[in-house]
Length: 410
Ligand code: GLV
Ligand code: MN
Ligand code: MN
Image (cartoon, rainbow, N blue to C red; front, side, top):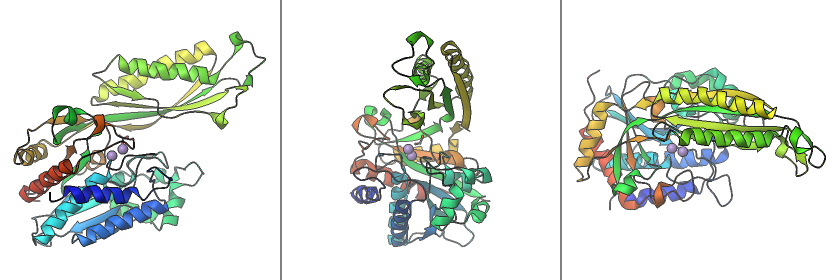
């Protein structure tokens, strides 16, 4: 096996850069972000690339093309994680690409394009609630408003970036143009390839997403003295709303999925107090933007009806919307050829998860290669797993794609 074993060892090594004892959590602009980024940059240099942090905390590695004015092909994925994460989500897409460059470099082979790998600084949005930060900057879609986002301690993204050594004023310069292709490899994070016995698959499109912050305000009161009929319990109302979200999405299984992922009583709650204020989030995903937008509108109406009936108020903040993104047909076909060349049946499949590729699709033809996810396809969970054999095949497929890709003439 040429690549797989080392990639899994490197993923284990990166999982050691964690903010939490005993579990993997690595968020944006933290000391562990820096340490992981330095390790990635060191591997990039060892593989024959120039590498370093950019103004926003992305790590960018460049393997020069066969001539100075060669076009650029980009790849990459994210180096941040969710809380208590698996070790391949994001990381794999960085490591597999470094392995390809290392192999090319060993063979002294240059490509008819400069190949750049980006370890994106923040895709998950855990610390500041803003997702796809690194890739948005490259796509020229980072807005100054995003610098005002605050973490749970009230630190703004701008303050944290300056403390990290980043340069907020230079963010507009990160925006890229004239990129010949963006190709991201990623663990599937679902069971399709596993169920069908396939190591890799070609992504057709990436689902769009809508996210809502909901606040339910009722009336706090004494748990022992307020009669049940008159209560305006914010938690009971919010719980009914969460179940309504689940019911709505479950009744449209082909159209969308929906998740209430955060749910908290303001101030933490107390055993003897009727909850007066509860906040929760709703995440809706669909490959079809019309279905997703209809669900947002219908749920807002349905949840307001619950609020009215229960004598509470509902604040509804639709704070994030991302359109579904189709992958480029020609790049899908080229990836499919590389899959076939490895004797693997070509499986096309959509992505329900979001990826940095969605942002890069605004400035370049975009494609994604999925790798089988073990253990039932579980992800955003420490049980997330892949085999060295699959990592090996996926890396060979990416390398084959790169060695056969002819960028169009500018
Ligand atoms: C990223 O992992 C997302 O799809 O939320
Ligand atoms: Mn993720
Ligand atoms: Mn990911």
